[in-house]
Amino acid sequence: MPNPKRRHSQQRGAKRRTHYKATPETWTVDAVTGESHLRHRAHWVENKLYYRGKVLVDKAPAVEGGEQNP
Image (cartoon, rainbow, N blue to C red; front, side, top):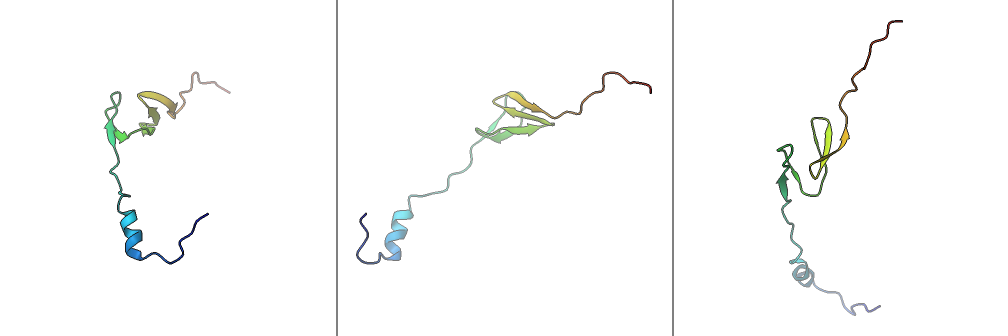
């Protein structure tokens, strides 16, 4: 594997790294809930996990069907 014979200057490394730029995050609005979220990420709204407009996980409190008397 080839290696440089001499040390490269700091300027040379900086010139090479100038093309690596931070890009802003892309936000979008969910058509179902109207909430803004990061693209390609699941997001929570009112104890429900949404992805692409569909509910994946529902953490709503369980409703007791019938009360039993002991």
